[in-house]
Image 1 (cartoon, rainbow, N blue to C red):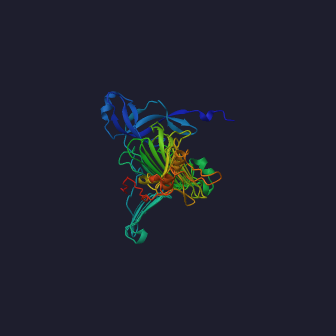
Image 2: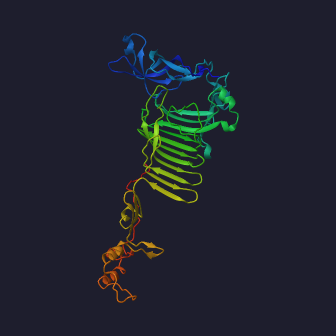
Amino acid sequence: MDDGSSYLNTIVPSICKGIYGKKLDKTETHEVYIYNSPIGEFSGPVYCTLIYPPGFRTNYKKNDRISVLIPFTFRNGKFDGVSPGSAKYILGKFEDRSIANLRVEHPVTKGDNDSISFVNEKSGAGLVASETGQLSISTGGAVYSIMKAGGYGTEENQHTDYAQNFSRIISYNSPYYLSREHFGMFTGKDQSDQASNISPDQIYINYRRFVTQTQGPDNWVSTCEGAWSPWVGANNGFNEVNKRSEVLFSKVINHDDTRLTIEAGDPGKEFFKLRVDNIISGERQIQLGPGATPATVGNKFKLTISDDGELDLRAGGDGTPQAPKDALQIKIDKDGNLKIYAKNIITISHSEADESNNSIVLDPKKGIDVTAKKGFRVNEQPVVVKKFIDWMNKNKDKLCQVTSIGGPAPIHPLALPEFSLGVSQPESSSGFLSVEQGPNSQGLIIDSDQHSSV
């Protein structure tokens, strides 16, 4: 039985590496950008104080590498973010360790007759340069890189990297810029997880990219191809791959309070999904490593296409997360049934300019209006319009002329001329019939938006 001990938090101080930013005016607080910590790099600054006398604060300048003491919360066997409300102290400046920390007696040795090598004898890691221009770099394990000069076909001037997990971080001398690319195979988040993932179906392979549009956490673009979910934000667990929806490609674009999400490949009704979300609770920086917190979202627009070709389009959403309301829904099932629902007026015509010529308008307040200048027919027969009823009502007291009991009752001479004219004329000329000889509809649907590929 769980006694609740697994939910206890432990505060663990840790020395982290960072880049000095600046001192805030009229305070003893300093901005520091952490690029090495138990939870990885931070996208925004942390605010620290000096642990030694203030007189030494002039020793620091922008972009100095410094050590920072930060308390972290340790929970369930792993670090779970910065301890809320904790104080952070700058310990001092330092220099990063050299990339080669072993003493090499002979850094350049003759490997054979056509190559020069720089190889560690114990690990086998090193570099081999051949006379043909091929350069090979190896860790002594499964990670290595080959560069070739010349050649033909797809191997001409080739550069090939081999690794189980390949990551590229573009920072331009600033570790807190979050631009990251990852292609790899995920076998498990820890040793226990790896031991339990014995089936090939339990080993995930994906390719994902993440680029911030600004230095702030609110604007970013991410893609996730051949995996199960978009890489939404930097705090989506970069070291883990979680199965959410089984998609072949996804892309997320976040800007201020609007987020565009594209997903393709999820089996079923949402094989293709395009959403425009309204971020009700704005993205904000919290002390849980780099990135932004998940937002509370509600759809303003959603388009889904099933793997059977069924379509469900919703637009004009109010953006509320719970029980969202849409202003429009269009559904087409695999049998070809079409359903159109709209919150307000529905207009059907050949184009916006043709509404006054040929159109059907469904108004929730006024009912249904049909405009048919070319005529309105049922089974190819013109429909009689209201003007015929108006004529009968107008002449109801003198509609028929009685000649004899049981004999014919012709139309009264006072009403006959207007009736004879009405049955031969369209309704626009005071006639009774919907037959019309108006202009043809043009059907020109013009988009005022000028699209461009750049």
